[in-house]
Image (cartoon, rainbow, N blue to C red; front, side, top):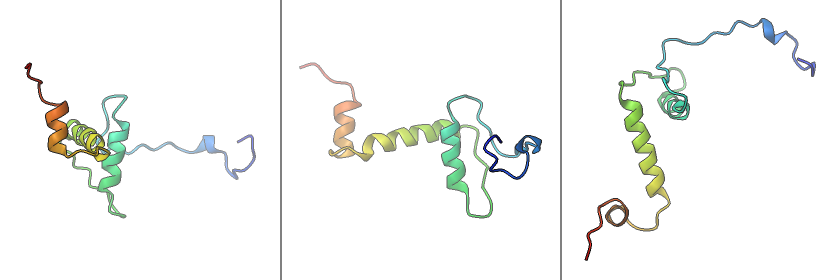
Length: 89
């Protein structure tokens, strides 16, 4: 407001928060919700019928995608080398 670039007093605007959309219950899931909302936007509407456990599954999906996206070795080899228990010889 101090800059004088707004024609109206922004303090007087009513804050409206949509309640019909799923909301995060943690302080760290906002990015996941954002990605789900953007992915469900069709340009006119947003499909917001996320099943209750979807955030946990989506978190695993995103983490897995990040892990394998920049690896230069095949996924099966990566899993065998880094994700399976090592046997002593």
